[in-house]
Image (cartoon, rainbow, N blue to C red; front, top):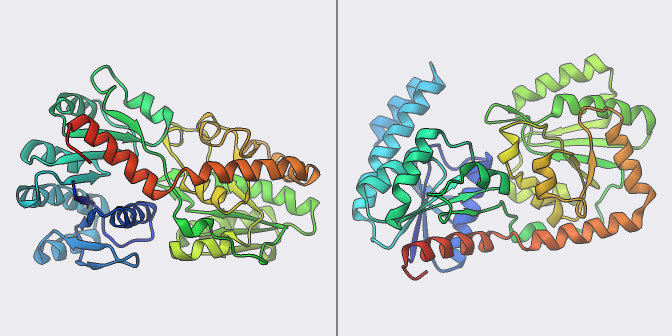
Length: 378
């Protein structure tokens, strides 16, 4: 196993989470002496982490899909996804047999497991349909396929007697530079959020969070808030809510497009990092990458108390608030400030936990699992 392919059904490079995690995982693979290549429907080139990416669709097809995108993104993406599945087969036919295809999209697993002979890691990020689960169950016994789930809840939802030995936990990670301190710029009064307003169309809780912010600012003359990476159309929705609540907008800062390399600089400024994800079927299976990144940067983490988030960031790593109670964020911040000794323990515990979640550890876990199942040496 000296080559790992990372096939995508979406364009690359991109600032979206799937692009960041794919690029960082490929980068870690290269550092571990694997030959890594990202396969994408878009162009060919080298990204900012020196990863090679190969556009697998012919130019005429890319142009056609781009035209369809102007009229219907849903139809265009379906065509793009199916096209990637088809063209992956030809790559699999010529790739070394002991290569690994590391897929995030089950649509790309189907042609690889049916028409090629390489090993496959399916990194599942969403609920797998009954048809998808039956397909996985029917193919895992080939010894070529393993399934990585983000959380214990996600593992349970994927689990069945047939899949039990082939599903493993594959959490998110933080790159090394997130652990390297940038000293002297932390603002003790700055509360931050890194990420999007919506994830795959699902609510991340930011509109409701503004009610908490209104309460905080009314009771503290020093607290400030920063949102990093919010998409422009969602920013408009937040601005409407800010005006509706009559919040002092001068104390809320928005930073839209930030490369992943720049995030540590912003995290070094923030004293409190928020994860406001509400309870939902979608969120119950997520592993927010910001959980590890906040922990790596030694930020006081404040999370909505849901079962999923509590499983990831237990009580010894974070302070909890209730997204449904607009007073509770201010209460959580006050709690941290009133007991700095306990806050320090939480910071150290969370940081130690984050150290276990490097991208190199992620690659090692996945490769060792597929090697064990297949009987091929890693």
